[in-house]
Image 1 (cartoon, rainbow, N blue to C red):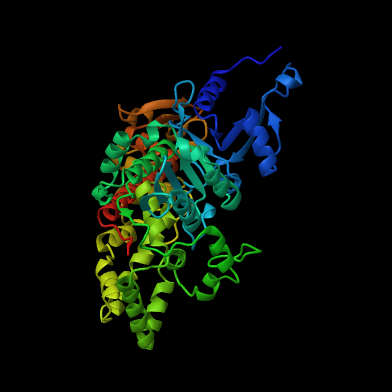
Image 2: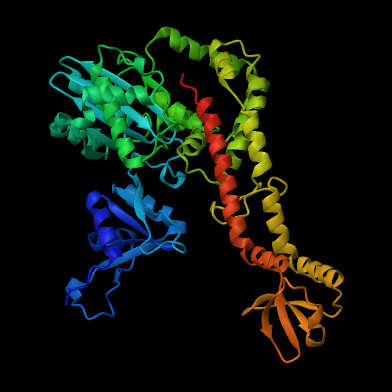
Amino acid sequence: MAAKITPMRKQYLALKKKHPDCLLFFRLGDFYEMFDEDARIASKELDLTLTTRDRNKDIPVEDRVPMCGVPYHSYQSYLARLIAKGYKVAICEQLEDPSVAQGLVERDVVRIVTPGTALEASMLEESRNNYIASVFLNEDRCGLCFCDLSTGEVLSTAFGGEECLSHLLNELGRFHPREAVLSNQAWKNEAVTQTLEEKLDCRREKGSTKRFDFVVAGATVSRQFENYTVVPSDAPEALRAVGGMLSYLYETQKNRLGHLRVLQYYSSGRFMELDLTARRNLELTETLRGKEKRGSLLWVLDQTKTAMGGRLLRSWLEKPLLNPAEIGKRLAAVRDLAADLVAREEIVLCLKEITDLERLISRMVYGNAGGRDLVALSAGLHKIPRLRELLNPMPSSLLREVCNQLDELAELTNLIDQAIVDDPPFSVREGGMIRDGYSKNVDYLRNVMTHGKEMVAEIEVRTKESCGIKNIRVKYNRVFGYYIEVAKSQTDLVPQDWVRKQTTVNAERYINQELKDLEHTILSAKDQITDLEYQIFEQVRQCAADQVEQRWLRLTY
């Protein structure tokens, strides 16, 4: 006898039908569950036990629904392993509180995680960009877009002519994306697919014709980027590539992507072009045999002290400049730093204490930053004034430009320092994040949790004084909660607004409004404070997102 399809099962199947190419993490209480073929894949890839909800039912083994799950509070490590293997994972969340939901809990997919769209630190290399590429290809023209969602960097270019395909493959080798969205012709091109799959180990996603439509792409790009006119009018393929990228990111992230604000267009002649074979043989960023950083040119040169600096140095090695003026500008900055040993060492010490502001800001604007991210952002921003002080005397134009662009966002750091404790918990829904003195309501609830017995004793004293009953007692039990116990010989002194709760052999038990309110506060204080702290945290996070979105810190030189 086949299993009857439950409402929850119908809900799962409907969501899975919308995302057939994804492993669906379906939130059930404290777990993300997977069913059917998703469960079989996950159990194999993650070494999870495959089970079923139909084990104790009179259902043939072949008709039972396989399932496995991972704890929601530690799902990121499992998710990282699946993403590293090239899978797409759809995160399905409960959109309402199960304790107050009427019937089936509403659920929906809130985000799709792919190799090129990962934001979690556990899925990213600290000193390496995580690019996703978008490729538009027609007969003799090509448009390219590269985006690092974790930092907000978006670059685009276009080229044509007989060497169009060669340029395309070289640019893919230069950026080494983890995922690529391809137009129909790019998807069919064997050279492109072979380079992505076999040489770059890059996941491919086939884009629809509409995704790369010129009119649609133009409207999308103009809405997303304030400087969208940076794309030349004679490079419509670049605009199509950017539009195709945005379409895919909107579809997977289900977010307005406010941290993608600046679009950089570069011409193919700005950087030295090396084919993939030359890059490998030169061992610029990894060794030929072991594919490791150790032993490469980057390994020899990389003395950077921040994750941002590590990514920038790698970018410079992968994109060597050709313009003598730009090269001279960099060399002048290096000369100034090399000449002033004291200032250089002070800058090094300062940089060691600066956190990864690019990725912290991206998570802030994206909306998935935690309490620890806020504290880390504040700690990093606090070092900016000292860095600016050290850079200000430097004569080179590049270092002056860097100095002028630095902004410590003093209002934001003050807000974070006032609102968030120094060592917040990992989860933003556990409470314990808001600093004492920031919120009167939080302080009151904490006082209730800490001094509840004293508050009950105070009510007892006041009640004795107000009604003249000397031997009343305020007590508590699990059945009736808090109550005022009065000896039967003195019940004639009980105020009329008291409500009788229970009669015993020698006494009557009552409750009044003051005690009822305190009872509700004490018994619900933990849940109240957790909800209130989360609301305050979201307000602080949104305020942080608004400020960094308006005054973007990332340097684009």
